[in-house]
Image (cartoon, rainbow, N blue to C red; front, side, top):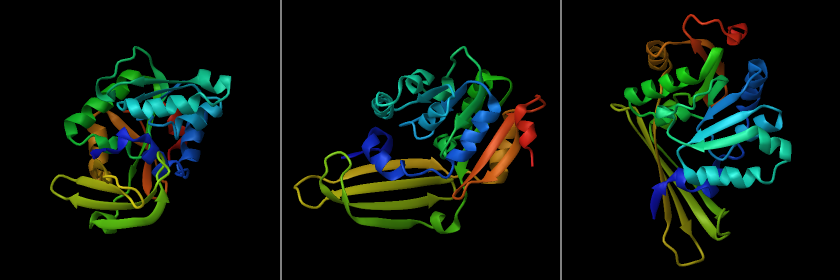
Amino acid sequence: MTDSLYGDPFVYRMLFDGREHDLRWYLDLATQASGEILEIGVGTGRVALPLARAGHSVVGVDRSQAMLQSLAAELDRERVDVRSRLSSICADARSLDLGRRFALVLCPFNGLAHQLEDDDLTSLLAAVHRHLEPGGCLAFDVLAPDPVRLGGSCSSVPWLRHPRTGDVCRYDEELSYEPATERVRIRMTIRFMQVEREPEILTLELRQFFPAALERNLGKAGFEVVQQVDLGDSLGYLCAPVGAASWGRVLRR
């Protein structure tokens, strides 16, 4: 069976629920913003849930119904006040028009990398403009270019329990990079070791952004970089509409 990673939130959670090193930055920005937050690519709520627990109102958007169902199940286990602060919508963010504006728009964990073509990125950034309050900011992070990683890689976990079935499995991951198109392709294979079952194969295709080219695209779309931070394996960007007064300017380096 072959499918997108975003069709299997159980595997997604197994791989990424432990990712926390970017959360402090997003939580600090939310506190600075002092208003409602829109998260593009909310997924299973890895960022949105901590924001809601911290008292922030969040609207999450995602194209994957499976991911949003997982988020809803997680949200059902939260306190009533947390549930009241987080809502979600299944939609393509490139054409999003909620008729509302937000103090902060987030696109965490390499979310922009799903915009494989410049036109896709332009449409997404135009949607962000439509949803920003005067003085509002866009914050996102993209994976930092890593020559070793972009040279292609293979990795394995020889033993794990399948997050959905509990069966003993082996996990193999292959990554390849195509410089001409700046495409990163990831193939994840889960092999069942003790039961007769076809392997599960999940795929992911992403765009590798490089800082200079990314900033040119942001500029063309009417954004300027207010802050850039090193988040370890990713670079965080805080951006404001060009020429607009912004709370984010207090964070300029």
